[in-house]
Image (cartoon, rainbow, N blue to C red):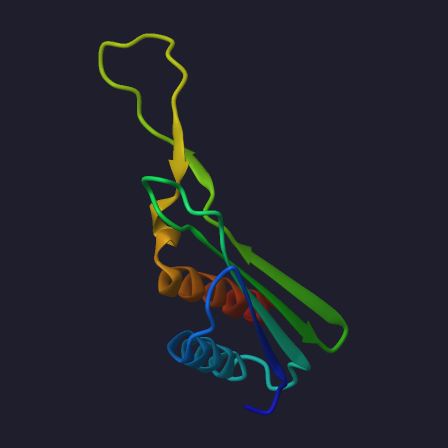
Length: 120
């Protein structure tokens, strides 16, 4: 990889496997634009929920000549369907289960990054 890559971990222990996955995904971005100046990736574990565990956030900051691209993949909160037979009860929310898996969050963030680099 020619471009400088910075990987930062917040509230999560640094892992060789996660670092390798991020590095491989960042290298693939060079196929779509060979003049990427830098890539900064921040991986963060949100505060764990008592019953649901961790949710992960991945942020990518890409610098291209004349453009800065920011990607934020977060475990958003989605409504839980109300039970049948209940009327006008506020729906509880739960973290998006897709980003309970760190590798899925990384994959999705780099997929968005790839599309934005292609558009550029």
